[in-house]
Structures are given as structure tokens and as C-alpha cells.
Length: 348
Image (cartoon, rainbow, N blue to C red; front, side):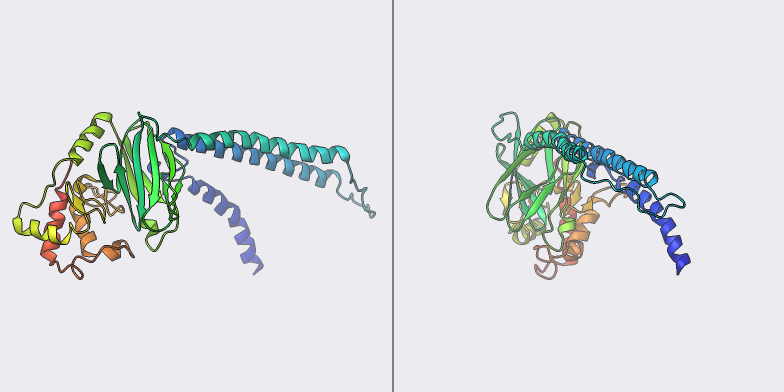
């Protein structure tokens, strides 16, 4: 038993070191430790400041403790209790003033940064306005200035401030793009939250729901795709194009009868579920199945669509979409052909 405890005690520091090392590992598009925008850089700066202060305090306190234990330890042959020191007015003042100074050093930049990150750019004519609505378990993005809605992929122009207005359709969610900004809640009380961030560099960044919102909370992902201004304008125009339905009239009628009762493509359908306009050019299916023709991080979009449509509850348990086969009466062939049609529905 003693030998087991000694082995475990030797391993603990090793586990702690590797734990701290691995905690810093992660993808650039999903890590607060690898900021890709000014808001995330400000947050990381505060983290570094707080950690630096804690390390300095830790070193000073442990150094003083070590000095006291060595300097005032009981000497060999000494039987009486060493002289006790207490009631030092200077030390008490010192121990009070130092923490106050440290709190001020930490509080001033924290308050300044928090208020800066909470800036409301909704009145900025150069900012892109986006209304975000959380649903179990998907995200809806509306661009009121352009009259379009989309889902799961948030397309933004790189370098521009994005003014967000956040609400929820059901329960409490939390909108979070770790590499671009901190999180902000969507409240079921009806309150609307606002904040903004920007992505200076073009690229794709992963977003998460940061609030436990149900069985598939962990699968409630979305992508932020920062593109050039020209690409953004092209995407806006493509979103406004008339709906593209399946070429086969029979399949088109089935799609309209079964799918467009909840979803929308172009100017047709309902907006109860996620918009399917241009779903073939999105970064993922259902937010969680990554589209990747190389198969390194995911699978081709058509394969992902088939995976989703054949087993929606298996992919995202608890979601509200009816089962295409059991609830909507679609055959396997119809499901596969709809998946093929949607995979080919691209905007670029």
C-alpha cells in the first residue's frame, strides 16, 4: 500500500505538468489561447495579466514561508518554543496595502476592457448588423439591412465590425466564438443582448453554444466564415436569387410538400427550421458534420446530408426535426435524391 502511494505521489507532478501543457493545446479556430481578433486578444491580455499577478504573489508568499520555516525553525538541542512574533503594525498595514494595489492593477484594465467589448455598434452605419436567434439546436442569422436569413454558417466581411443583436426562440443559449470573442447569452425572458466583434483575417472560425441547453447542447455548433468584401457582397446577392428546386418535377413536388413546410430555399418555403439556401456550400451539415472532400476532418457534403437525413436523432439527439422516413414517409431513395439535390445547391 505504501509503495503504491509513493508511486502515485511521484506521478502527480508529472500529471499536473502534462495537464497544464495539454490544456493549452487546441485548434486555432476554437481556442481562446490563439486569438484571431481584437476582442479575443483583449481577453487573452487580461488572462495573462491576472496569471502574472498570481504567479508573482505565489512566488513571494512561498519564498517568505520558506524563509520563515528555515530561519525560525527549532535548532538542534533547543527544547523551548522559539520567540513568537505577532501584532506587528507595519506588517499588518503592508499585508493590507499590497492586495489593494494588486486589485486596482487588475481592476482598472478589466473594467476598461469589459466596457470596450460591450460597445454597441448597432448605430454604426459601417457595421454589419446581424440578428442571432438561438434554437434547440441550431443558430439562425438574419441580416436586416439585406433582407436575408441563413443558418449555421455566419458569413461576415473580414475587417468590419459586426453588430450583433441576440435573442432565443426557446431556452437559454450562449453565443461563443472562442477565437474571436467572449460569449454572450440569448435570454428566454425576452431581453435582447447586443455586442460586437470583428475578424481581421479571412478564414473559418468555430462557434459553440456555451450554455447547457439540452441533450445536444454539445453539438450546437456554428461556423463564422470571414471573407473579402467582394465575396461577401456576392454571397448576399446569391442569397437573394430565386429558389433552385430539384430538376425532377416529381422530386421537386415531394421536396415542396415535405421539406418546405418547415425549411426555406430562396424565396420559397417556411422559416420554422434552418434555411437550406446554398446548404451545399456550407462548412458543415447540422452544424456538427464537417464537410471535407479530403476526408481529413469530415466527409463530403452529400455523404453528410445522407447521414443526417437517415438518422437525425442519432446525429443530434433531441432535435425537433421529424424523421424523414418514419414521420414524413419518405423512402430511402427519395432521401438519397434529396440529399444529392441539396449537396448540389451551392452559392459559389
